[in-house]
Length: 282
Ligand SMILES: [Zn+2]
Image (tube, rainbow, N blue to C red; front, side, top):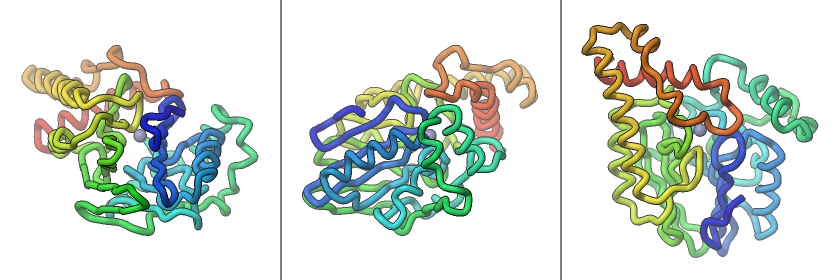
């Protein structure tokens, strides 16, 4: 876990998203939960040593951000966008969420397998508080500004903490790893990048990869345009969607985020599909 500011801790080196903690004078706020149980429980204990974890905010509903919500049930108030339930407890592809999670723990966090609850005991801990466009949470001496930032997924949100000059943007940004567009809408995603640029921050905590400075927005935008341009060239050559999928790949640009190398082909294929649909307005 890395200390980003004296009140902000971020874990960017584990499989799954980047779970984070913000400490206030009245307890802490947890942002996103991990897929691996051991690091998650360590982070949770670390937070609780300084007081209660008052809120858990999910930046989106993909399983790598919400799987660990179980361990906060009845303890912290879960907050998310009102569309969070649309993708809550879903995974890439169509495998069963529970089996998918157990498989990951078996392979990548074996020591914690005994901590995994049975299927009946596992709590799919959905948000108790939702919002539509913007919501402010005040806790102790901190203000948390939550903004709906659709693009990567319909329920995507950003948590801006002005006092710390940090924004937690979830999978709107991927740094030094493959960008997943499998649930994305490209138009809103580009608008969201413009919005993030208006925030007065020193750091963006992405959904995956290391923490970045504000300038990274340009890089992320440029990479999305590179994707769009490659698919546009394919369309210009009269390639069908299948031909675009076959011929277009950015697999050599970045590795897949920690621990899921096997998803490379899926990412390339679904990114082509999303860009193709954007360009042909399907
Ligand atoms: Zn993610």
